[in-house]
Image 1 (cartoon, each protein chain N blue to C red):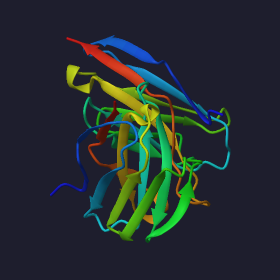
Image 2: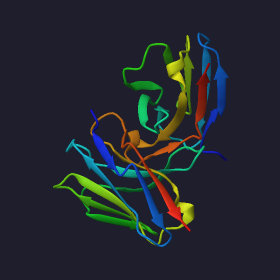
Image 3: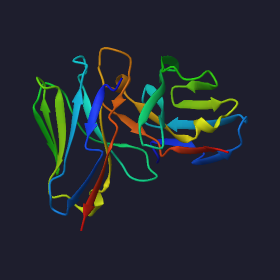
Image 4: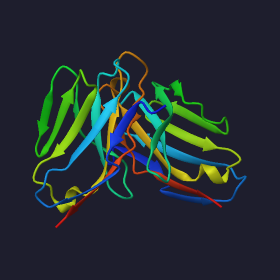
Length: 113
Length: 113
């Protein structure tokens, strides 16, 4: 049972473009939605996160858009750079229960120079 | 200065052997995790400990036994290794049971031959 569905599986964008990665969740009890960035040979690193009381959050060139009614959220990367090439994971968890972060299946992003 | 450190980084061993992976965090977090990342990059939680107490055990074979001597350490011992155990294992930690995201170690690539 995949509780967090992520798409696309891979994405290629030209430098300066705006890659968008989408996620959908099933459990309405989820109340914390982080995005992680993973470079080859490294562990996932927390990039940005949002809670369902806001519809958008920006940190630098990274923006999360959140649609609570549709149970969807997405990551946008503005002015993308080759250094942004990595695998991106969306995730979800709920504060009310034991700590368990459910990850999406990942998106391999490649930014072409 | 590494926040979450795990050793070894690479582990190659024969089927049937027993091996351990160590993890330490210096962030003062109260919750630690073990995640398994398969060849398709899918991240799946295995265990979660909060203040040395096991709170999540995700139907992992009992050949896998986590041990938390104190809240800064969470080790993973694996008995009778099988080919299917080959994967990258990540240790992670978080504060407040993951309500603010998790910090991951660099991973241990386990190869069973």
